[in-house]
Image (cartoon, rainbow, N blue to C red; front, top):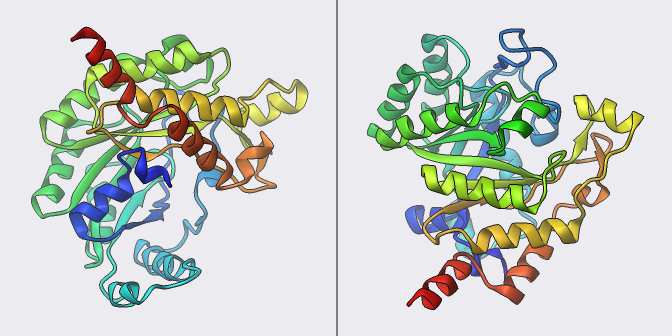
Length: 322
């Protein structure tokens, strides 16, 4: 049994809506970040080197070329093709995922031009915009609504990472929880779906912090979640700190246990876009288990199998109340 048997995954959502799983094509549109260009700071968040989260770093290429090459990779990545998938290959649909850095951080006309280039591809059915909570002005939200009205499925992916303001300051995030709250409310009031990113294992945080972050995000309102383990990658501030004084990092068993706990306390209508992440060596410095794509996923599935799937803790709580 796999993750879909225990969790309301984005893959399941796509199969229900489109009749097939939809591959995300990551786009580097050469955006920067206010935490790198001096507006808020320099050097970025202490954990960040965006190249570690994307396998396609051809930012000099036009968006249309990035999409085209992404489709080729998506098709060639399939180890085997079922007869039913042969027909689907010719009608395959994709999501344009603006992932690198802060993908709403530019002038309106520049953003519109870049987003337009992506959705002009007739194979694109979704537009996912990765950004910071403090860089989403009203005009950008209104622009995203226009794509929705054209039938494009839009997700605003907000990198909160933690709801603990002290941790946000410690990792040089450059914003606080209040800005996330404001952006989420404005986006969801317009009907834009929000996917929030949370990191487990940030310096100084414990299981209590992970749970509090989840409860805070759910209380504000959210449509999707992405969970990641903290891992140290080349080019980040943490990499320099780790080489000088290696910090304790979250282990595989602990991560799987904590993620499963969060999933059990999440209502079943929330869509999990991701429950773990990995990075390739030599980009990855530590922990070693994050270099293996399936180890984290298998460990999480085992935890869910043994202790209950999404929303099960809420169901138990409700039954006790009754």
